[in-house]
Length: 390
Ligand code: COS
Image (tube, rainbow, N blue to C red):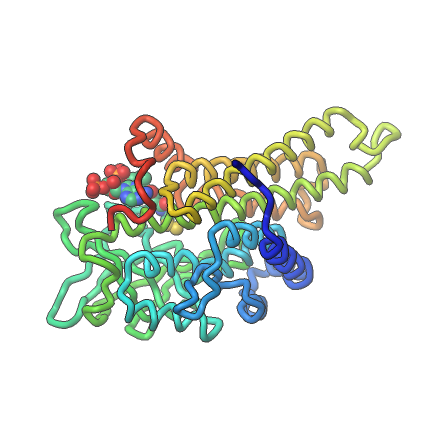
């Protein structure tokens, strides 16, 4: 039986996240966007009320909430401001590899840090010359006695300037392509250098930085999982986090649709509110369908994870569709506002800029299509459990 009814607990969680978005995020979102303000206070409050680190298992101090639970929160907070939600949610990306494959000691120490204090962690995969092509990375980790020595540079790192520790991918065998990549935990105080904060088109309240490792030494036991298994750990991580990005995109689309609906009822042209014109009604109708469909795909991709199934295909379906939907709905919301939509004083201009990153980060829309094509043409992986391979 397929049942889309949320439990009372899930409804409460969603309501709590919505209240938080409405009271703490929305009132400052446009100002923070304009000034590129780091949302430190909001992070502290979200941490205190339990809206961060929801995925960390109970044995390491987290609530151990499910993936669907996480998506409910992510949609609401992103409805408030997706830039601020990117800052709040990034720990989920950094900790997924740790939850998937790290030793008990590493889990206790590093997941524990995030549940004991409002600290942040970052996920360092992308490099200037290795974005979609993960295997092209140049960062290296060389074993020297009881240490790993890391050298290289990672870019577009969310929360990079503020993280307490980093999940870092590096080549441990340069000749072995994707089979020569390993994942590590690198504490900031091991000597991580934050080089550059990006000045972005959208999500301007989130911090995006370049971080460098110049002969950074970490203990040998800071390897996550087995040596040379980092690529698979990264892919399994993205399977788990893309539903959350899809939920965020759904939140942006919903916010844009709501603004467009409200405005279309107020704005009078040709003697009637523009909502009375079929041209506007059809745009609103398509927005409503897109939001609904994006949410359904998101929920399905998350529920598969909660059931322990491999969700690679659904995760890419959800991320691809919801991101494209957010971009389209936000663009059409600007259209509904007409010339006013192009002006910063009105809310939808920000949403259109914010939506764009949804088609870029955690795998571009084209990478999602590539995954979908592979999984559809070669459906061999679909029956595998979510934990296969590591
Ligand atoms: N789960 C587990 N294993 C996976 C997997 C998944 N979702 N996807 C791929 N793998 C495994 C494959 O089974 C294969 O295993 P073997 O070594 O046993 O053969 C291995 O990983 C390599 O897979 P593949 O051949 O598909 O790798 P490609 O180099 O062709 O890369 C893409 C695949 C392009 C999909 C991948 O590099 C990718 O997702 N790129 C985008 C990265 C991204 O999202 N970056 C954003 C920044 S992170 S915020």
